[in-house]
Image: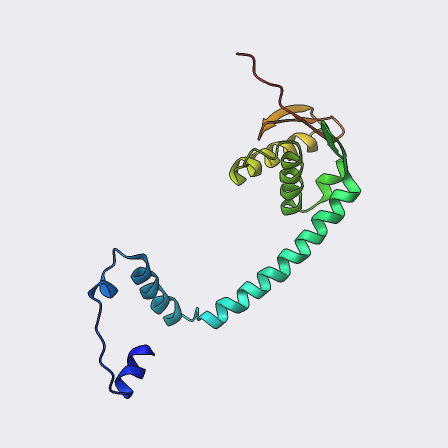
Length: 159
């Protein structure tokens, strides 16, 4: 568009040779945009997708808040999540677990892969009525035979 405007008005311009060098991210992104649009992923369609994802995020956030209020009990050193937790969709369970860990250990960054793996293990154990004790993100998560989760900060390590 800029080039066409300059040509239409007979303006002089200088072509920057770096605009064709793949070592620059802006060039690679520009080329990807052409490929993306050639298969129908236009900026307009991607914008619409972003709107839909934002709408879905809003619904998930509301559901997490409702489940937190209904299922979670907190005090400064312990969080308990009732067994009804296991009836929630997996995404909600992951977000509730992440929120509980963050509440006890805001200084720790959780890796989603580790949280997903832990959730699967705990779900399998809860379904079979087994107790368990695991750690993640500086927290100890205890699973009762009845499916209740208790989270506490991990004790300081002795050195």
